[in-house]
Amino acid sequence: MIGPGEYAPDVTEGITCIADLPEPKVVRRSRNYPSRRCPRCGQRAGRCGLGRRTLHDLGDVRAGRPVDLVVTYSKHKCPHCHQRFTADTSDLAQPKCRYTRRVQDLAVRLVAEDGLPYRNASWHLWRDHRVFVPYATIQNWVEAAGEKKSGPPVHHLPRRGPGRLQRLPGHGRGLRRSLLRAQHR
Image 1 (cartoon, rainbow, N blue to C red):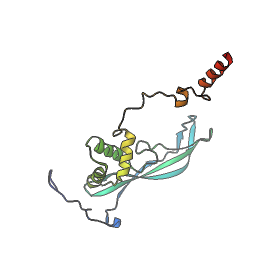
Image 2: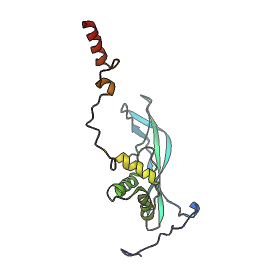
Image 3: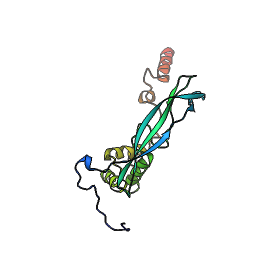
Image 4: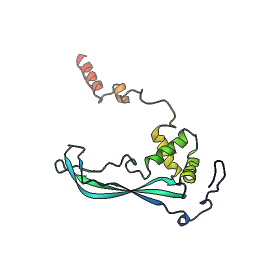
């Protein structure tokens, strides 16, 4: 067992072939329900199918292996409004994302709070947590979180377009005012 402050070389350092990397540990989760409430009308919607989603989570540090969550979820169709929807998995990951929220939060924290460059944060995630995240993906997460955006906040800008500010013809009030002026001349 390695004590605190002792250097332990990375066992994956120098591996150039993907097949030589350790296999991920598969953890199964279920969001399979016989029925759910419809988000549109609130009526009971029965299950009409199943789906499966694989998410990359923070790895098993002791075994030195990555962890993949395989989430099985139910698909539903409302008989009243014909709305199709799936069981909620937003507590695990954002829609269409291949990584769990824990991975995203840690990556953003490494860049925003610790000040690591994106490439170093990617290496840190692999070395210490056995999850590989491309540095460009980390950059997208940080920019979406708003941590490294430069410039003033945009919430104080006016909500009108340039045509409306200049009262150009064809933009609502500007057109009406120009017609009223033409009638009074």
